Length: 81
Image (cartoon, rainbow, N blue to C red; front, side, top):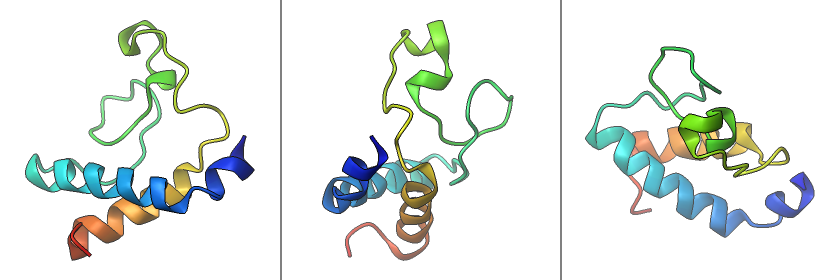
């Protein structure tokens, strides 16, 4: 659930740093796009259905808005901080 993700700040930040690195390297916009929209950006397996391997991760409670805020910060300022 969401409350559990929000207690895992270190894990969210570490994943955001990793994501920011790839966003910068491949010029991927640091924006959440949900499922198949035709836009470039970041999504989760759960939004892709069969194309995402029918996985449910990261789950309905994942705090996308906070994660994306971290991704944008690290993409702009560097992931080594």
